[in-house]
Structures are given as structure tokens and as C-alpha cells.
Length: 248
Image (cartoon, rainbow, N blue to C red; front, side, top):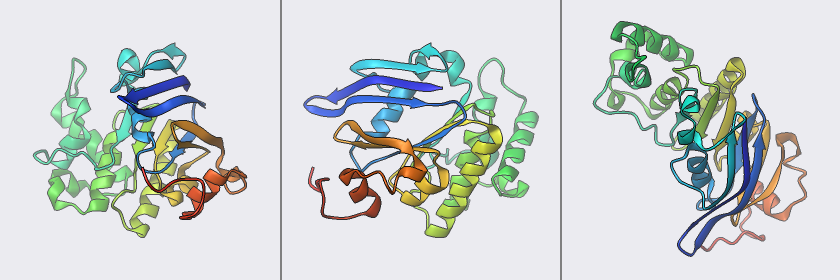
């Protein structure tokens, strides 16, 4: 579904992505791990076309070009943003149905609200939550609304940016389980960026670790613990000592 070939991206003298090649099979769940500032978000933005790579090639569903260069793709992807990114001035149902109310193929408000409520129930919230505003919801509920919005158009590709950021361990487990259930149920291709190892084990089929602008390791999640790479070993166990420098 997504193939990255020798992607490079620098900001001045800061070489964020130095040579990234990855293949994400259709219907699989890839989790990209790495410390803060290692380029995970830049990689995601390159795929979407929000940032233009300096070099390399991106192919999505057999077509060359980033998300913004493939209009058809833009109608078939969803995204759960790290901070939720909900519109404070809109009720929950309008947040979920935001894309459904735009463009030439937009739904009526009645149909859009019905679909929003359906997705709201799918992520474990109640129909009466549809008319609340984001400020009236807990952090975990806001994350569920974000997830409902991400799946509102039944996308074939879903991106998750730090899906459990700011959540307590119990709610993190709930969100991880929901993501895994929904991705499997929809048969969607998923790309998640995170540094939360619980999310990695709960969500991933395959894992790729970025360090110093390169893919340090890539393989099935079941092989992560036995990867035999000192960078991977230090990161997944959270050790202060090792080849990964703590000063940037």
C-alpha cells in the first residue's frame, strides 16, 4: 500500500531523514518507533505530502506521489492526531462528520449526524455525547472522538500520531485495543508513530525503528525483543546507557 524509497529530508544543516526505505503491505499495521526528534512526524508528513522530501520516491497504492499528489487517496485515508485536534466550537457529531459535510459529495446534516452517532457508538461512546462540545469530555473521550472521526469515511489507510499521548495506562490500553479491533475489522492499512512500547505490542504487525535519520531495524513485532541490535535493545527497555545519546 505504501512504499518509501531512499527518502531524504533536511532543514538547513539538520538532516532529519537521511535515507529511509520502507514497505507497508496492504492490510498490515506498521508502528514506527524512535525517540523524540528522530523524524517520525516528519516521515508521516512526507507521506501525506504536507512536507516535500528533498530526495527519494513515495508510492501509495501503486501510484507514485504523496497523499496530496494523489487526490483519490485523500478520500480514502483517516488520521488520529496526537492532541486530538478537535474543533472546540463544534459539537462532537460535527467534529466526527467534518469531512462528510464538505465538498461536492457532502451528506445532508441529518445523514451526517446519523453516521457520526454510528461511529461514536463504535468507539464506545453514547449517542447523547454527540451534542456535547469537546471541552465537556475527558481526555480519553476526546481521543475516542478523534478515532471516530478518523474512521468516519471507512478509510483504507489510517495514520495514528502518538495515539495514547496524555492518557493514563488504563485508558491507553483501551485506545490501543480499539485501534487494533477497528483496523482489523476494516481491513485497513495502518501506520502509527509512537514511543509508547505498550502501543507497539498492542497495535503492530511490523515495527520500524528510526535513529539518526535511518531505519535502524525493521521486522515483525514478535522479533523485536530478540532483534539483537543495541540501539533497539536500549530503546525498548528504556535504558539510559547505550549507543543512543541522550543529548541532542
